[in-house]
Image 1 (cartoon, rainbow, N blue to C red):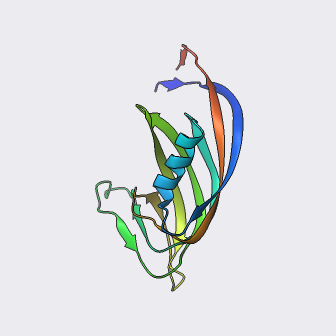
Image 2 (spheres, helix red, strand yellow; image 1 turned 135 degrees about the horizontal axis):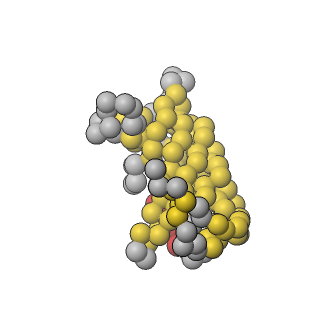
Length: 138
């Protein structure tokens, strides 16, 4: 096994609100670009979506198609993730749980441009300021 120890410290905290029809993933990427943050930890989010598409990686189904959760006001129950730079653009990897109108709960990774906000989504983002380190630890 090869691991890398990253050192750093917490940076700025952003409290944000996504509005109706903003996409969850694209909206978070836009916030990070606006504040010129290169590495961000998504600490949490709560709100409602018109729909959501999630990638679910279960053993033996790694390449399965995304699942679609539809219905008015799909509730965003939990949200965690990380935003890093892919070249000059932020790239978010967001994971969470949502509930449909019948109360069925789903979890997985949110698909980019497939989770439009219904009313609002409240977010807390924390910048991570890395201190580059050369050493690899085994």
